[in-house]
Image (tube, rainbow, N blue to C red; front, side):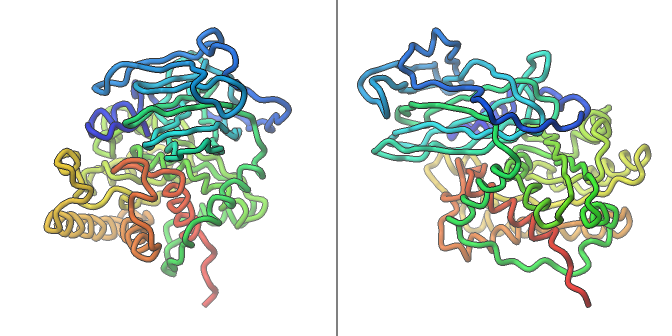
Length: 418
């Protein structure tokens, strides 16, 4: 989500805007209207006259951009963003529909693009979609797929540089079908080292109702609960892969997330109500890196939910993406990895946390998955550096998101007959 490579807290604060609570209750999913684009500009007309605006990013300096004839992918004009965020006017979206985002870019250092969502009252929602604008000395055509959030009525597209300016041209956002969104994930995955891990047998003992719905082609509502890392995982569109693996099934995926936040927050006040119960889930996947390794808080959330909705099932995961022990302090010192002793201690602590989850799962009947171990093993086998899968030192880019999604899909594969 909305990163700031120099300040970890500002990175995660900006990642979730105003920290608005999740959206409205679900309604029937409409069919995608692919007849027209919801946003389009070749930048030959002054974008300020069509509602494009710029704003500063907290602790990251002023907005600075130029509508210019110095560079262009097509026509005579493009936009160069040198500071802050340059954002489109809001456009209408329909919950659970998919949209293809395309634009041309040129930059000497990585930048970011983002899709932010707003409810019917115009309030920003916490869960966005965020990834890199890659370095390219020539104009590069970009194409991404985004799903509108539950409760979303509007969205806006934005661009942000990291260091040097980012040139942008020929922007469009258009609705696409569910099948086209699935094709996009397959196209991306074909360019990546494959996921090879083999899931353990018996992992569905606490997920009987979930698996029965998948196998019998029933609708399944899944809530992803956690932080920006959990949001990245949900942005992989893994639910489309599961629908393909279980023909006839239909999955509603709810991003119920908040920056730098774990179950230590969700267990308090009425947060279980607003973040989980209001969505009436069949399955809650608790994920991310912000639970403070607090097993008791996770158990508290699970128990509170089951008091009112006893049939809800849970899958609790360890974290991923960020290197164990990595912190903004190491980054400030110019380090891309933590000292080995710090990393080793972090790995031990997370292993202890997972062991405690497994013990708790026996009493509270929830499923567990050690995403951290599988993620690190994938990186070791991929032949690519960790940074190739990241948009900053904390979060995933589209490649990293896709791998998270493929790992989750592999977890839910049919178990072999004994």
